[in-house]
Length: 211
Ligand SMILES: N[C@@H](CCC(=O)N[C@@H](CS)C(=O)NCC(=O)O)C(=O)O
Image 1 (cartoon, rainbow, N blue to C red):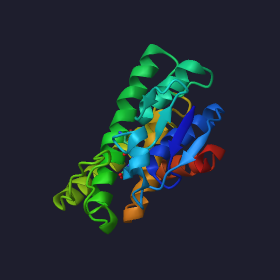
Image 2: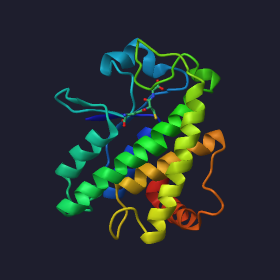
Image 3: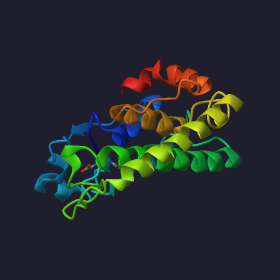
Image 4: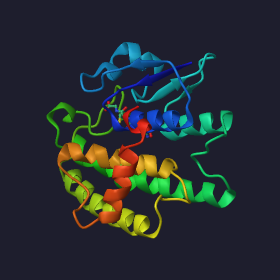
């Protein structure tokens, strides 16, 4: 089994934090996204979408979505569940993880990719050999979505210490990675959002945050 990874990129980080929280070790292969190694023939032969993270099993089965990778390991190693303990928790983690992914991670990606010179021809991740050029208007849409994301987080984290239940789940991991990602484009947790700041400090102090 191999996990194709990129140390600096936010989506591979979601998978690494998940694995570290569960205490699972997976052999990793580092791929450089900024220099376009993921779009070269060697990696496109492994994953034609050019996306990271990608998990390849020994029989060649490939998972190239963070949540598919996490779901696979959660089923194999159900202890220290990060996708919810009960049917209600599992459904809530699904809802809030997706919200954090769409309104945090993807909105951040809209802001970052549509203004960064290195991504001018690579507006979307997963474009593979058929990239889509940057669309500058998406920067503003991303910023507006992120403002809503921060307000939603603050409301949720004022009501409870983690997004779902009494412990950290994948919903927190995705929201946390999105926040650290958008710092690259100088967007931070608003000063007034004290609960979100406390939650971020707590999560950043966990050993998994530097996985
Ligand atoms: N929906 C995918 C998104 C993965 C993704 O966007 N990965 C980025 C790195 S953070 C990537 O592979 N980018 C490739 C590129 O920019 O060419 C998932 O959740 O795994």
